[in-house]
Image (cartoon, rainbow, N blue to C red):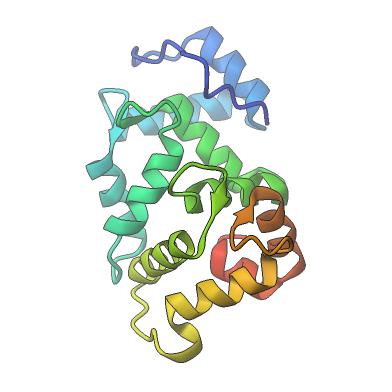
Amino acid sequence: MGNESGKKRNTASTQLTPTQVAFLKTNTKYSESEIREWHMGFMRDCPTGKLDKKKFTEIYQMFYPTGKAQKFCKFAFDTFDTNGDGSIDFEEFLLAISATSQGDIDERLGLAFNMFDISGDGQIDSKELTKLISAMYDLIGETNRKGDRDPKYLAADIMKKLDVNGDRRLSKEEFITGCKKDPHIRRILAPSM
């Protein structure tokens, strides 16, 4: 999708500039009018032009009223806050929305991988899988965590199935390929697909 998250972009303004519109049109499948519509909604909810972790969690909690969103939101927020400044600006927000809703399966699974890669080392280990599966259970209010629903068991089982090279870690390629081949694992690790 061409996310230029590594570059510093001037997003401090609450006004949408022609440069931002052009950037977002290039890096999403949204039209200019759709981008402007998203921006109006974002600014209504975040008048400073920044979405902080607390507000992000509050929004998630509205979608999952019976769950506990805090743990999951920490991982999701850190994934969407691509410049690491502790807030999500409109560009980061729309790029994340686009990737999760418009991207092809590889892009969406790549975003899921980035969320699971808590350490940021380009690999996922069993501990990271266990933490995120537990956070996902908390989010949806899942309390049955016994037997084959235990997060440690699930993490070990997923690792066994997807770890092609046997190094006890999943590369992005192993993760994406494995999720595409196994719909059950994809439902666990990327339920929105």
